[in-house]
Image (cartoon, rainbow, N blue to C red):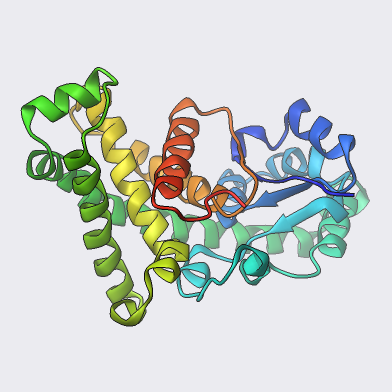
Length: 277
């Protein structure tokens, strides 16, 4: 029996839609990125953890948990059949145990609460680091826009017009520059990588996703960038979007994230690369 594997956004973790998806077919799998847990733990309440488990706790065998973004960025991802290297193994017993604890008398146990506090602290550190990294990206958006597109091309983006070949060249050229910078920072041998290997790399897809995010920013009128926390959330959403291109899709309630996923998938398909497999 063939199932569907979907990346699940935090906004859909407690949804009837997710429950229906998992109930419909025992082979359907919900794939949870690392930031799902950070978003939950940063709330620093037991109730938030209980809410997180309200659906997935009933389907432990159908849950996939991804490794951290840093680990995945360093992986040499092969064919679509090999994406299991992105995943933690043997998570079902852990999810089942967590659900039993959170729904039982051990929920208020001091040891359990201390473990949760440790997770909350780890989440706060991770999110603070991402907050700092977002500043550089925010500051570069206006400059990137001016360098990549003419006034006429910006009007095409804002009016949802047909992109020219020159615009596509600019989009992929910018993505390649960002990819090379990111790959260098992670110590990846990007100079010796074949094109189809590059297209499979998480950091290349993330770099292309950043350019797609730039297109959204232009499309919505290039608003003044003041809310760094919103950009940080966009970057978290972008990581979910990129993960979705390795699986069968992306379940989200966020219109911007859905738009970025659709357009990133199309861009990868246009580059003759397997996108959502």
